[in-house]
Length: 373
Image 1 (cartoon, rainbow, N blue to C red):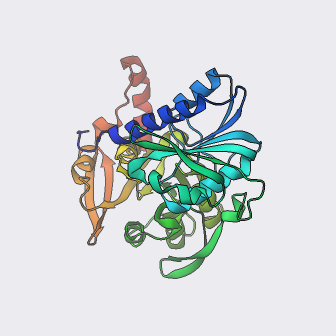
Image 2 (image 1 turned 120 degrees about the horizontal axis):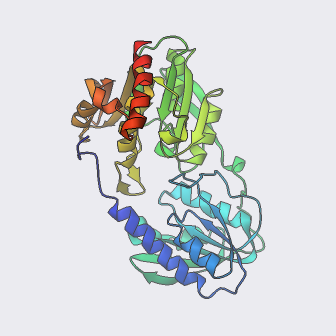
């Protein structure tokens, strides 16, 4: 396919590298043999440096990534030090600080780091809701590092994922339903304009159709499709482990997996439809990586009559990349901000296996047979 969907990852990668450098610097003054909980530092550089220095490091990463398992809450066990990469959303900040306090020993040290353009400069007041002796101790690489202490009493501590559960309602195709959400989820766990437009234009599918919901969030699109096709078999995926907890509660009986891409699902699985409001932001940065990976994987994951149905903002250049992959591309709906695209019938060259000639020769008869079925 063309290059129109390939964007650089410069800004997020640069921030992550700077954050790691600041955290490694903070660890230089620690006594040896500390139990350190490292939260949402994604490069692996900090963990390697801490381990080499003789510390016992445990990880909590809410979001799945390449080689990274997303988990909704840190594993049990006390930490002498917690190092937290501060989230950007305020609700997610409060949630992460609470999780950190729940694992930190009394008198233990909290380090909070973030980039200046992500709001870290004003983090002190929020940290002070749970911690004492809050001070800014480092500022470099366009980042800031805060240090604080875990007090003996934290009256506002919730201390568990369950304590953060929010109960509300969601309008699913005109019907108000009970709905579960948690802090820091896409659209604050509600119904965004793009998902609402796609939900209103979901395809008519046969009974027992198998559908994959990529970037499912709390499960809005899957719930809407189930309301429209009661017998549909749903498989959902999101990189946010907490979104998956909510989706399982909101769409009971559906399969929900925390993962980064379709590679988290069995290679043999084929779908009548793939639906998605794909995540196009990483923090404050726009990223097309999830959408690009979805477009690359989708053609070989659809049955012969299967459809890929996506909603994206109007300015996203999606039509040409879809036409490079599929014979049939149609605009199903649009409003002032979003467009819903439907694509089907992948080009033959897209389905050709990327393998050595002898392996490809073995694969082609199976593909041909599947198409004849």
